[in-house]
Amino acid sequence: MELRFQHIEYLIGLAGIPLVIALFLWVLRWKKKTARKIGDEQLVRQLTGSYSPKNFLFKFLLLAVSLAAIITGAANLQQPGPMEQVQRKGVDVAIALDVSKSMLADDIKPSRLDRAKQMVLKLMEQLPDDRIALVLFAGRAYMQMPLTTDHSAARMFVQQASPDVVPAQGTVITEALRMSNTAFNSKERKYKSIILITDGEDHDPGAVPLAQQLTEDGVMINTIGIGSPEGAPIPDPATGDFKKDQQGNTVITKLNEPELQQLAAATKGIYLRLSNIEEAVKALKDQLATIESTSMDDSAFKNFKNYFPWFLGAALVLLVLEFFYPERKRVAP
Image 1 (cartoon, rainbow, N blue to C red):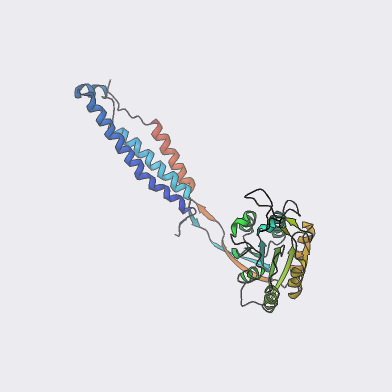
Image 2: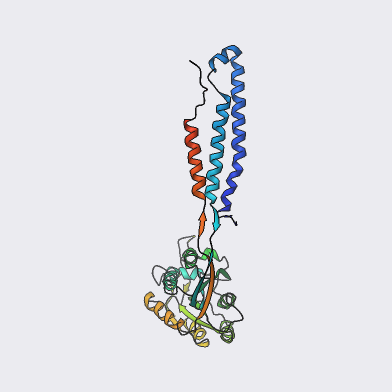
């Protein structure tokens, strides 16, 4: 029987049990010291005649065991259920999302980055059978999430995306494409697409040659331009002012459409300037539908048998018993 804890990190709370025991021993010593300070042992025995050290110890054991049961219950002991094969048909999609500070510009409300995240979340709703990977990039690119059909986890990563995730600033499209390609099965030469979402502000001469190389591996690159050709200043969250260059002039970030159009054209993809999210998602969905889909078998546990109610139920019974169990011993009439 294979058992596991769902939240094994909670078991560290069991380390507090020895501290509780130490506190109990300290209380016992304190009681003995207090009794000795009174001085008259016979008087102390008369005053504490109904007190039962055994009952006091038993009540403490009930509390200690109930605490251990609560901690163990929080960790949730589980037994995996039977495996089931789930067959899906879809393509592999790597979403490369620009999180550079230029994406904080608000020429698209509420900001370029927020609008891009809204589009990605909407797109994932329309791709239930596709595996999705997420790459965040600025001056460097990071694989935030490998290919998965767990779209709920993908949504969480998208919602948390911000410039703070990638300390190195810039817009290195080449590295973003290369990192996105690592998410795919190198042995397959189809069923793969990269969706690049960026303002393309920094010219990256190596991006188009790399895109042409990825085409030979069966990768289609679809590009989404965020921003306006006229541009907008970049807000600085640290100062509340706009970003300035070394001469003190306000920096204007502009959408670089020509490079994004070249990238899409080089891989038989499409370029879209994001204005209407619904239209962009529909266009991307239709474009991805032109890629031949493949059947994928996902093995997953059908369900888990959770044992936490037993531990929490036992803790509740012990706490009720401790509450009603007397600390004083019964005195014969």
